Image 1: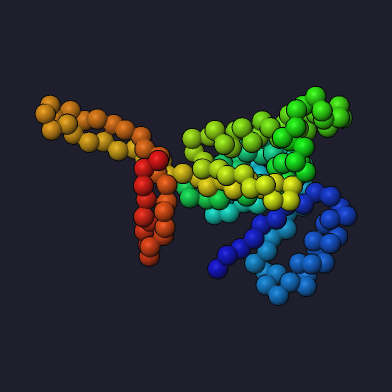
Image 2 (image 1 turned 90 degrees about the horizontal axis):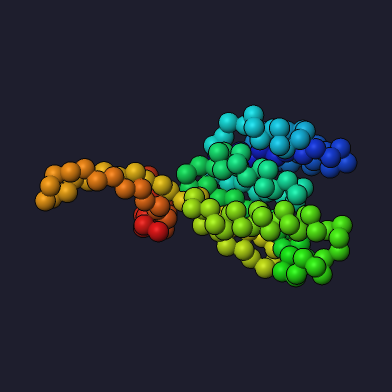
Length: 173
């Protein structure tokens, strides 16, 4: 019962997208939203189990807050082209001046997704690089102390190990 929502702004790509959707066997399950992703993301309600991010690289950081809002508690974010042909690993001084801003923004984005307590992220060095980020489950628990009967509150990050029927097998991270 999956559905797909895709966002495209560039007219040349929209022409191809419309044609491909018209020919797709299950086109009624795909929604093409036309316009600026930054504006459209703010209006989407979600939630989404899976988000594939392949957009203007300099905008990834700007999209991240809305993506986090839209992802389910166990959602997956896959981000494409995060290593910039491997040049992201080079010193910023070896990068041509015109490319330094995009490299700086991509480094900022990678730092954000690898240091965000809400995400488990791995970077795969395939092609131009891909980041896989899975949202962690957060749980608030309250327990009573055996000795003094006081309530103790704790916040836990949980990782889903597998899904079983209607539930999940989890562990604390």
